[in-house]
Length: 98
Image (cartoon, rainbow, N blue to C red; front, side):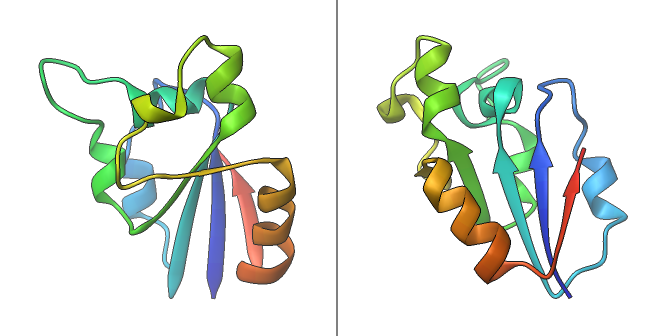
């Protein structure tokens, strides 16, 4: 199964992702979830970024929060709304919102 997971909260803990079983796991950071891709605490990136190689952050949510796409961790691909639609319909069999 190919699973796309929307993460909209910065307080989200990555241990929830450890319980998800998928052949392909994609994490789509939206709303305050984009802080996982842009913020470091004590010099360390979010542990959520270590969970998968398919990481995306919504560019509109990055800009709304006064950040730049250059602030995004290199492991995260910046996407727009159209890209998210393509991901949901073409890349993942199931989608969850956490």
